Length: 493
Image 1 (cartoon, rainbow, N blue to C red):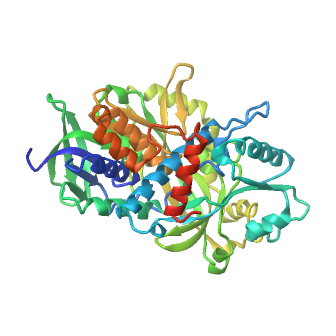
Image 2: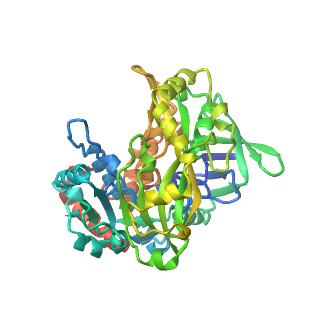
Image 3: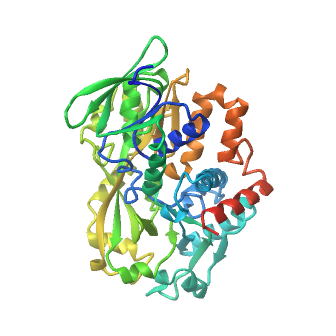
């Protein structure tokens, strides 16, 4: 193997590539791994603390994970699955902390209660019903519920300031929720990988071509973004974890499994509090219900954050429409992604989502006053001059073929892998980073299946994720043991 030959090529320096690289390096330390990042630093796009929700999505407060149908019935299966997936992430991070492969947990995760807040008879009834259903399950047994304003003043005093005492409100809370700085976490994981001779990081370089060789490996063209020079890398396995940039790279690969996929870009914006006195009064993630027609990523929340060690208070996100696939991308990204195999699905998905497009365009043209009015649903005493608008990251939602509609817009994440397991791509957005470990274990199960069956890899993966191969959704005793360990190790208890 020459110097430009690697076992694993990771494209994109975000949390997905960092997680997969860390898993593979722990499963087989001899693997030669190369990570290529287009920007001059890792974790600068959707993984960056200012560009993603950072919640530690666990289904505790994201109401879109427990949809209600026209009959009023609530389904909780997705919330259970996402909560169990986040518990897997917590196990993995705990193991890395215990093995000194991550710094003390306070460098990337903070204990932050997860709450809901709703108002009006209909939504209060919904939240009461949701709480009743979820708390019957061991994953959500510790969730609290209140309609008492005095209790809410204790939980989150900021949201009660200036509120009409006659307003019908309700809230839930999980005390051991978390705030995760995924940018810090990613930089820590990649920093640990860089200590290994078998790992290399190249920044300021972009992948511009992919070709499968007769020997089953991949020849990948890597271009220096500054000098324009390029070189060819030969890799046994390629992972496309470049966020919104993954779809164009998947299309370049030409694998049959990637045919028909399109992307629908959605931008985001935050209101950020400028007053430290206000920031200090709020310590929770308080989620409400999304507006009618809003995409799931636009569920409004008043959000305590610790980013690069500094406290912040954000409200949003406000959705927007853009043709870029990355925050630092090109306005031509959407047009360039249209191919003969995905043209029909994209047109069909666009036709069936005209209301969503109109909603997103309307969001773009909101005034600062209108945005602050939305904030006042959560913080009635908010002053316009104490908040400023900031641009969040880009999300590219999946468009795929549909027998019924021709094309369907999806709001989840999906792994697309070549039949021979030599290449995989992660498409989509929410819940994203919070379930990265489960997603990347899924990549390993599909692309390294034979090796994962060996006793060596089984032992190693269970040392990283003790619940691997078992169901946290079905096994309450297992969940109790896992949760006690992770809450203690990560300082969330």
